[in-house]
Image (cartoon, protein in one colour):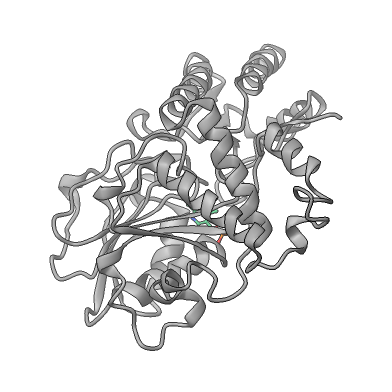
Amino acid sequence: MNRAFNFSAGPATLPLEVLEEAGAELFDYRGTGMSVMEMSHRSPEFIDIAQRAEADLRELLDVPTDYAVLFLQGGATAQFAAVPLNLLGDRVSADYVNTGAWATKAISEAQRYCRANVVASSEATNFDRVPPRADWQLDPRAAYVHIVGNETIGGVEFHDFPDVGAVPLVADMSSTLLSRPLDVSRFGVIYAGAQKNIGPAGLVLVVVRRDLLDRARPDTPSVLDWSLNAENESMYNTPATYSWYIAGLVFRWIKRQGGLTVMAQHNRTKAQKLYRAIDSSNFYRCPVIEHNRSLMNVTFTLADESLDKAFVKGAEAAGMRNLKGHRSVGGMRASIYNAVPEAAVDALVDYMAAFETEHV
Ligand SMILES: *Cc1c(COP(=O)(O)O)cnc(C)c1O
């Protein structure tokens, strides 16, 4: 077996222990003679898998009992539509903070259903930061305030969460959920596509305060209706069973590591090493202001962009994959989710230093 150091932004690396566990029970899940993939979602075995996953997630995130936890399909992108559909009620507008590519997508999807007010944006500075809360022009009549907790493409992260008063705060946490402890009670809704830091693609988690489950528009498609899915324990239709199962193994792996506090320590150590390597050189540069740099997606550019291809090629030859930045922003991006070991970051830092020496 030859596992690469995989810096993919998503679908992303999973803990080797989880893959080994899944591999060991791939053909015969605990004496059932079936793979989890081949099992009815209504079978006692799968119900047990599903309930354990939810219980472990609730424990990890300390989810208050007045929140529903949903395991849905359609990725975070489906939730870009589900959020306005489920929350507008009789309101006509929602507030959005634009921090980059994913916020922009969320805004344009919401515009299909309501007036999506961009109450703050860092577009003028090329999305290098979270606009300071003092500059947000919030509307108290908005149905909700939407933020993207971590911009996976730009590498911009909220390290603390704004107070938005009585209007529910809704956060796309796709690439940061489970990277550190989180006070769920600060939010009306949190959603996260699994393929970044949680599990395989095909699954999106939605954590929603139950008092918000009564305001879906009547034309909300059933698969996107949180209330209907909560009543049916995320089995209104067939859920992404295998992704749900793997996410459950990931939750247990995080618990074995010591939970989110320990995860956060590892993640801070990895990110600090990488940002230090970038900041201590004149050859590499991080485009994000220090205060809002992501712990999960570290973006950086080379002094001479004509060397980008050589950088990526050399990294691949050294067993480091998927370092090329998103096509929309260029440069490099190292996604260092929970499952990326510190050794991968050490290897990258060494490679960066060697590449710089060779090219200056
Ligand atoms: C990846 C990502 C999305 C889109 O996820 P899909 O599963 O492709 O729908 C949305 N928001 C953020 C922050 C992401 O990282």
